Length: 175
Image 1 (spheres, rainbow, N blue to C red):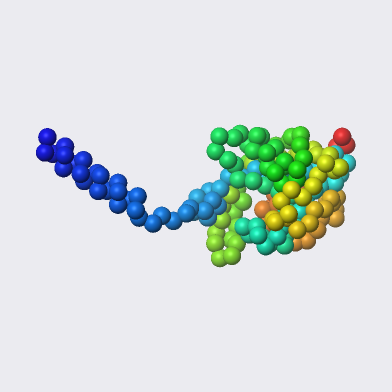
Image 2: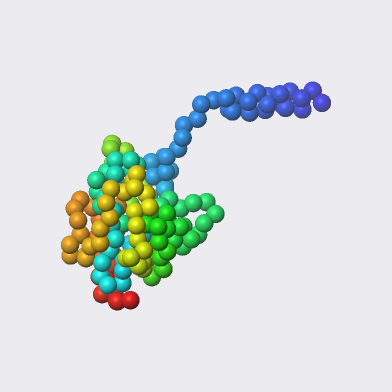
């Protein structure tokens, strides 16, 4: 009986000391592999929606980005991407195609980052799109693939280069 009490007291001390210890907030993509669902919204007529990131974004300020969101616990990638489109652009979207999942490895602001991207092409109605996150989005624009703005978000640039044929196929498929 004394052994059980002593073990219990030791466990209680350990538990209470770990609760009072300061903990570091782990950052996705830096401290562990982040999982994101990038989306490439288009109007089905060859135009893709991009936004210019504000200085209130996590990184890549002033770069043009199609949009993305960290995969939330309890959501499928498909549910997550449609939720993110509505959060950022205030409209409903329809999944056209999912690209293969791939790693985005980069260095940003002195930190190596690693994100697993599960990207989707999303059909949206241009008339329904709005800037639903004005604190993070400076500007919205519709662009053809041969007139993309600069500078591009590094993750988007990587995916666009790797899957250019898929972008071209979606671009030439009219709704």
